[in-house]
Image (cartoon, rainbow, N blue to C red):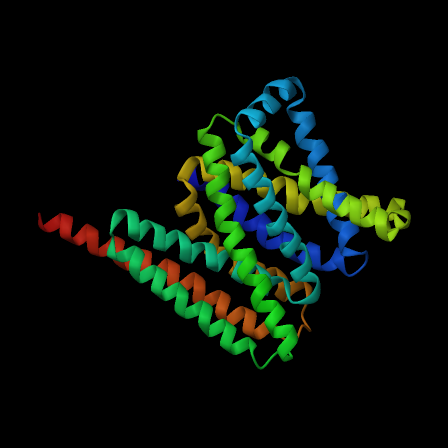
Length: 296
């Protein structure tokens, strides 16, 4: 059970973080939110590794291809994850950003281990995902719906890719805190250039600094640290399957904080369907396995 503590902590904090992104993103420009939030996280994790900086960046140079892949995927992942909760519901993002990785994780486990439980889990998750997309077709106008499908698919694919790339970095000798320190650079620089070009940088004030500091703590520091340790302890495929529980937690936070959102009932139905699919599939096959072992 101890090996899953960081996974549970990640699910809880990640579920709460999308509500925070929604609240802050409706008060300040999204690019500034990403810039300041990633800036705090970049500073925090570099301070943690201050005595290992040279050694850390030597590793980056030795594994520059892997590192480049990781930070590009991380940039795409977080840009989408910061934008979608502002223009849609927080639980919607959390559903697809975790349901897709759960599907890919279960599919990968089936292809590598040939367990029927993983195949049925992947098929069950796929049915829930497609059902949610169909249900949302009548909720949003066509253009907005198309952008939502594109954005959520990118979020899910990049989330799965990042879990595997960060696991490979860990296998290459990077400590979890080192991976967290070096991965924010591109996520900080791209919105920095954008904010300078659009003059949004001039909008920064003390209130905004405090707001984004809290956001960074809730969305980019605590959950991602827990995620990194979880990936290290249980592996990327099991971690991505466990992520499927997060939408239900996000829905509960959304239910408390955004009671009048028009799509909230749809979020709740499919978040519940996803978590039940994961828990029941795993539970049924675990029970069947125990029964077979008793007969032997």
